[in-house]
Image 1: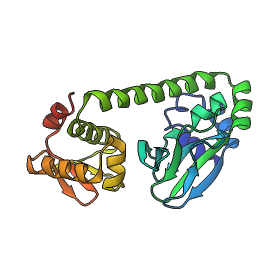
Image 2 (image 1 turned 60 degrees about the vertical axis):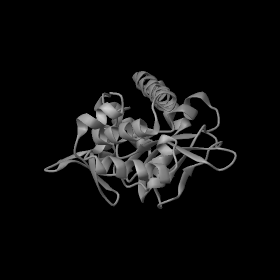
Image 3 (image 1 turned 45 degrees about the vertical axis):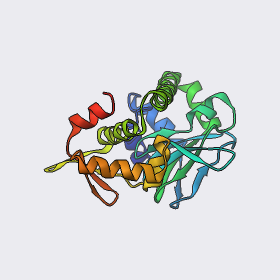
Image 4 (image 1 turned 120 degrees about the vertical axis):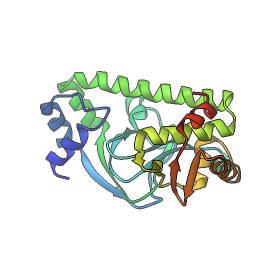
Length: 230
């Protein structure tokens, strides 16, 4: 990928966007571009944490898999979002895996290259700490939701989160193109596909939303917020 395009992407990234152009150019020069097919693993749970990633295009899901093979989706990430920082910082094996949900291109920076950037530009360290703080806050909130919200509330809150991140205003409401199967949505809220399907249909019957395949139109944001306990 051309360095100019990589810098443009980094300016949209939460992790890097407040850095000076000179710093972004130095980071971009150390990054490589990699492409992944739909369903291809970026890394597995337990792999060495030797690189971090920024999504150029496509969609990635970060997952934890139990010994029995059950999967929980921690988060989905689209363009300009980063992941893989935690293992890169503490040197421990990956605590989760990452998989391309659709054809995806990523920018990759290795531990060695990031260390060199940190030595030359110490201000990057503050951005990494902020990023890790966001990860911890998100995981804490997810844990609290699993304890204090029922499945209906967790589904409502997930939809509201998608609306904030990627929702497009539409004459009928807020349009969401999830790019996810109901099984993947279920894995994000700790429920079964059948249960999540019933909840979505129930929300549709109540007029909260309209289902159009993998596209969802949110029609009553206030009632969804109340259902999510917000």
